Length: 161
Image (cartoon, rainbow, N blue to C red):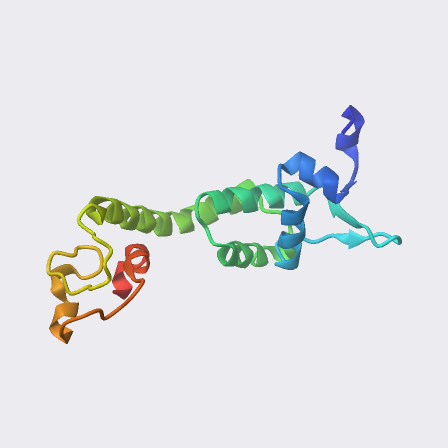
């Protein structure tokens, strides 16, 4: 992009991709998911406003810290008239998301600390399993596997186990 192109009011998908570092296919995905929008030219080509750069940056940073796209979309939907998030919006949302991130950190730390003792066999009735069957809760239901493929789910949401 030439030095004067930064002043353009609308960007092609290629220009937005270059400026944001996001693949064109990802931009199209974001658009299908309702995270960003474009207008169509008379030739049916997409054009994005320059403000879309900030929305894409907001999406990328949010994803990078582990926020699901559904939560990102919900946050963006709350902005009046679909406007671009401001610094104040980010501060508000990051404060809200901080608790969730702290919980995820705790869960991942728990997974890491207990992973060595996990043999991943699926029996889940081992009295020593601290990941899925702490205090042998599932052993009270009888022998054998009670829940399969639950190790990662329980590590992510131990309150559900």
